[in-house]
Amino acid sequence: MNNYTNKVVIITGAGSGMGRAMVGEFVSRGAYVAALDINLDRAIETVKKLEKPSMAVPLQVNVSDEKSVKNGIDAVIVRWGQIDLLCNNAGVLDGHAPAHEVSLEEWNRVMAVNLTGPFLMSRAVIPQMLKQGKGAIINTSSTSGFSAAGGGSAYTASKHGVIGLTRQMTFEYGALGIRINAICPGATATPMAMPEQTTAHSPDMDLAVSKVPARRWCKPEEIAKLAAFLGSDDADYVHGSAYVMDGGWLTAARDPF
Image (cartoon, rainbow, N blue to C red; front, top):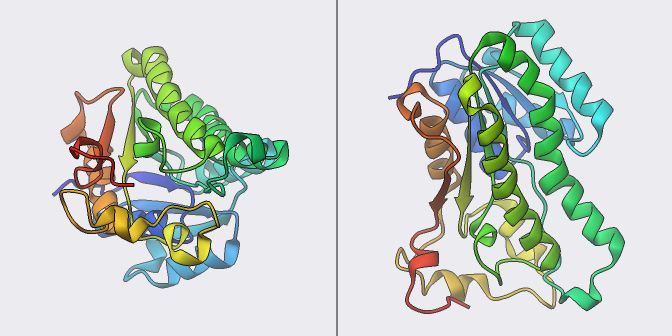
């Protein structure tokens, strides 16, 4: 089991889904965790659910806002004096609408959270990691970082961009002690993927999941365990990878949609 005793981990989108699962996973492994979310009440709820709530602190941070990001990172450094791992997990879906129906406002909203967010957060923590001589960043992309149909134009483009950002930052910082990788989940049972988030353009996800080799939704806790591996010293030689955890979605012989 990867040990995170005395390590400091920052997780965005910590108020629900995979982010909430990551907070629980890293605290269970001994880490001090900064649980960041744009909704402070949800971040507080995440921390309250922990067996050891004193190991985590909830912080309200808008990952698409430069000042909010700086304030959040400064608060973490003041509190613990180090940053060992950043999990850029915050994300939003689009409405699956075809490109000619997507407003510029919707495009910018999705890009701001899904792509600009990881950039701003990474840019804010990298100086501290360089000072330490070591650190790790995990960006949450998606199977939509490799293929179409899992989202609309904005979502798919943003998740392709996350993989590109991961690879470029690996090129820039890998030799300086900072490992950067991406996780690419498939259909994961989080509030963001649930039926109430669907639109007239949304595909039938239950039908799609029934056709992938695993024949089930992924659990957020499974993604959290992968993050715990990628952020640990056991993954010291893993740089610039886009780890797919999709139950065989991308390797299925037929399009699940």
